[in-house]
Amino acid sequence: MKKTLFVFLLSITMVSCGVSKKEHEESVTRYEEELEAAQVKNQELEEEIQVQSKEIKTMKKKVVTMKEEHTNELEQLSTTIPSGVYYRIQIGAIKNPASDAELGQFLIKEGEYYKWRIGYFKTLEEVELAKKDLKKLGAKRFWVVPMKDGEIITYQQAKLESEISENGF
Image (cartoon, rainbow, N blue to C red; front, side, top):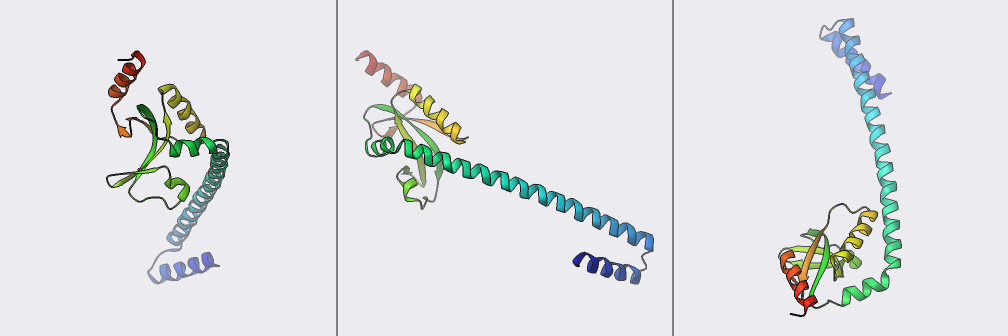
């Protein structure tokens, strides 16, 4: 109905402006082609949204499963900060804290940012295993943060501290 009304109004406007029938038909044809292209693009976008929604649901299920599998470990890690050198994986940094209470236990305020860090890993081998798990979950961007007694240190410092503790110096 809208299309018919538009074509009718376009016809009246074009006739009153001295537009020829051929020009009018070309204009209507262009409009119909543009409308069809927009409908095709809209359908493609709707299909993409459906695919992404399914992927999000799958990811949520994976997170729930992993959380169930590692609940005890997470509770222990969230309450016990090791001494000496260890590594954490930072998943993100945001200015406004998440409202989700479960996420809140992993947020650390540093300056104006809340940093989302997980795990306390004693070795880089443990970090690599955790990174593989994160990639399976679909995480694409994260980085490793070397720490000592709760403070961020450089990789060189972490390596030196680890060598000292291994060799008993």
